[in-house]
Length: 93
Image (cartoon, rainbow, N blue to C red; front, side, top):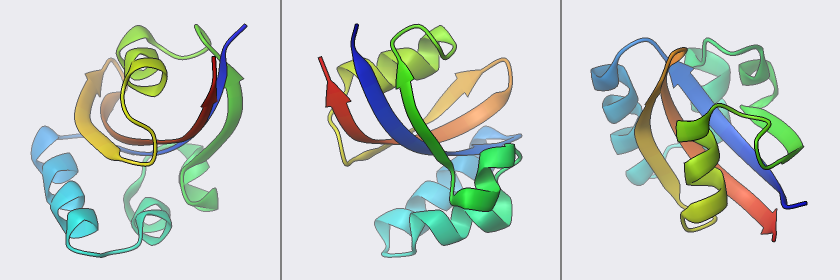
């Protein structure tokens, strides 16, 4: 079964996610922004979700983690929880 590890930032609006992505692209630290802005409890640990299996997350999130390039910040990605910025740290297919 495929596994991956990812960090993410969860916010309420697409605009907020896009603004944070621009800050990250400009050199701001992902973990620091996650601690300050993420609505997910994982924000306290810099957005770290640890290792999880394919199918453990909602489909739009899972699709990014298991199909898109690793070590790149993707998003905003809309789910029923809000808007995510997602960075896959590694993937074991």
